[in-house]
Length: 152
Image 1 (cartoon, rainbow, N blue to C red):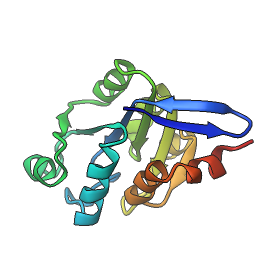
Image 2 (image 1 turned 90 degrees about the vertical axis):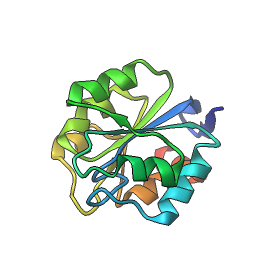
Image 3 (image 1 turned 60 degrees about the horizontal axis):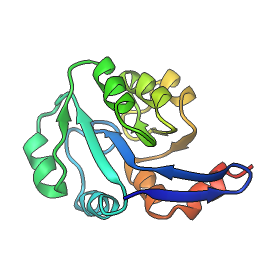
Image 4 (image 1 turned 180 degrees about the vertical axis):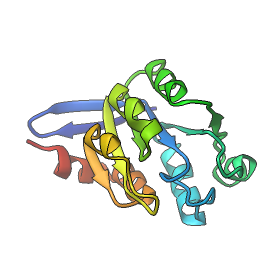
């Protein structure tokens, strides 16, 4: 399972994993929409989807139940970075201060602004910035959008 994108000026890029922060990126106050849950299920058919969370708002069991993806509980930002470094060909998606190094460690970094806003250093560590988590998922489900953004 891999997401392959031929980007004009950059060439073929292949990604095996996408790692999402949960709160502020996919979830608002610990909750995600049904539409997003379905989109994550669709995306998980194309590329391995990982969800990392410190569990700030709880809801871990609910997220697992509605997405079919078991969130991984992390304690500190370094846990996210180490998680990404253990994988290969990774897209990382986040918004907070504890996502900065995770985005820096990824092959492609997407920052979500969302309702919580985005930490400036995380924004600067990203390759692409989107308004909300659903936009990040849609970029990956419709890779021509990535081509349009990343082409040289």
